[in-house]
Length: 257
Image (cartoon, rainbow, N blue to C red):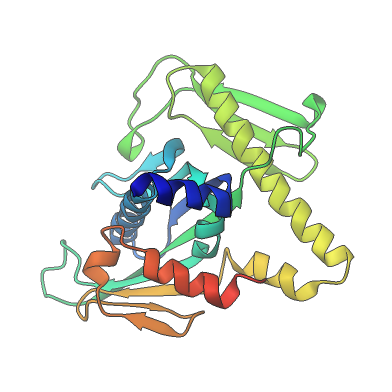
């Protein structure tokens, strides 16, 4: 039975790749811990979908949170299902470091990029400025003396990407190039939409990095998606990766955009 489901899912969506970036926002260390919760939630959801997952870049905080992380998921429907997760995610809860029991509000931003197909994005070597440097760990502590981390500047637009998760320059450079290609594809798609006068869809794509997407209210065990105008009262399950009801609602509402 499971095999039949996997085959049908492949027929419906095909094998896709999505590059996801999570960044801690307002809220200090609590924002970093929330960003880590989002990464864990998406990782569990990816596992439930039998998707492959790999980290392209990450920067951790001193308390075990995430300052920012970039990772890739690959499998049937990976981008189709994840594309509506972009935006600003807000959490309301009592942080572990709060001594007075007050509820705090913190944020993290999520961006979801389609990974370009081979040859879809052309990059000239002379348009790149590539630097190598030593990797760092949580809190900026020095980890490696070898300069394996990679920083790439795309000079025509000023886009900068970094990667330091692997132990060799070659793999980090390859991962950084994948991220750069995904960002250039997003930029290209927005420009094409604007050129043909499709301002609404262009605005939607831009907003998916900045609009308030969702609120995670832990005291009330409630998740609210502000675009869908709907709440779910099983936040504990959702944060453990049971995202399918939320994603299906968004697909139904926005799937034709």
